[in-house]
Length: 107
Length: 267
Length: 144
Image: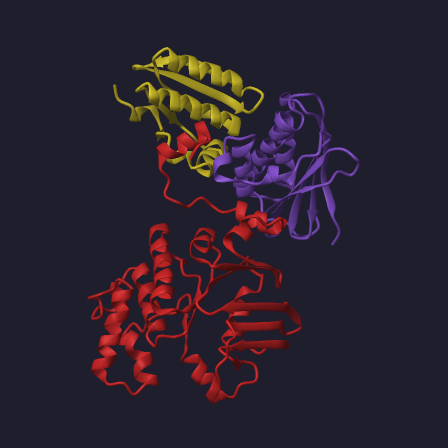
């Protein structure tokens, strides 16, 4: 699993590639919490993500909650396949803002 | 014949077959007057067969079924007919006649089985419509009703003769969660207002937990347990635990509450 | 029709092994002719179960996990065996408030995807076997 972070408009965009599981979700957690704690809204790009487990999901939930409590946002873009199924199974697709492409976010 | 027996239904050692295949195996089952009993079980568990036998639609291989002191298996046609008038049945797809209005549909059993005059029948019909929160809908055609309203109209017809017993098969089938909850509340209201004994066959756990006095769970043609909601929830039977743990979370999801539960573990 | 073993793998209970375990599960599910969607879900819950074993049964200590997948009549049977202290059956119970408790969310997913879940006593004197069963798709019930 690799991730890449860059600025997109006034957001920090975190793109995840590969599979997120218990082995590497702590790294994702650290990265996400750092972003939010620095006062940024974050977009998590799932388009190159092929797998995420409940530890990865828990990380997203934690970051989402932190963001919300600080009037920031966490959005998921490009979820497909297995990750999308997990979001649906846990009903978190009704909680997280989920968009198909970055075009849906204007400045 | 009066009896101080508190059970209105008693099934003893019921064994049934479908051709060579055994469906139910030595079922012992009793329901108290005024009880709401939910019967649950997966497909193939035999719950529909049990229901059909209780309604005397099928003849068992052996065992006895006594409903309101009538030995259903051996009763003659006349006795069974009298018993059936005390039993209301609301089946899935128990459709209303599409060419009659809601009111005309509901009146039908009264017109068929009683000599009551038309005014009385009209008032009884309207009373049932009120009970089902369908007041004012009597002149509509079935095609003009929503799914939930159709169920309620079917239920009104099932109870128009003020039966002692009501059998309800899969009440929430085809209904959205909100309407299903309304129907649950109606079932409770019916029992309280009309002192009915109600047998509900369902696979919806939330519904069962809400309305049941006791739940009977069938697996593979046998009764695994008959117990109160708490007894079911605390059962050590691994099949019951699986049944409980597998329920889909259909309830209306409040995003904020869900996140709170996930992050703090508190409700 | 007897039990047919489709897979037997042993791994150390390390998070770095999860990826390999998932790949093997995907392969086995493919052989059993599950749909892509089911393959994803089954892989997820086996991963969740292994995660729970690593985190809670072994508590991060080293150990072994044995995964076996069988085909029996119209079901696929998954056995996950560990050699940690025997856990109580109550650990498999889901209560609304324990979603956050050890493995809670993962456990919920397991119940949603599988048809049957139970804890079996170990073959030896130590450990646990988590048994998961799921109906096979139609058509894969003939001998493979």
